[in-house]
Length: 162
Image (tube, rainbow, N blue to C red; front, side, top):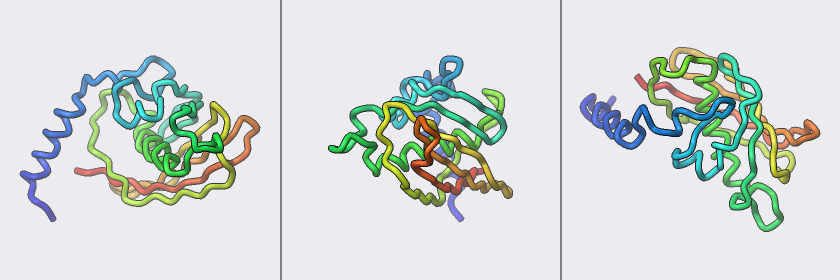
């Protein structure tokens, strides 16, 4: 199933790229992530506000940067799964104390359904772990506009590596 030395080497490489004291790991109060995360910076995730967090649940107020909009002014569809993936990974760990033991996570599967375009400068993302079995979990993520209209629905299967 794989060489344990290869896994150890990958873990060391991950720490070199993402050290435990990386600025993005220590966001300002009320924020999900700080500056410096490669994907987070693309999404301007340092500007997102955590409205609610509990074990396996996040409610976020998110920004839609101009650089992620298509020619019609809405979120370019290909970036939607980037939001979903980043939020799902954080939802897996939501409600846990910072600095608690962590194992790397991988996205095994993702399904994204688009109902309405994301057009507002800000929108809400609600994400929740809906099933957990062993090291695998299923995360439901939904995007809403300011009126509560469901814009996007996604299911993500995550696997925690040993």
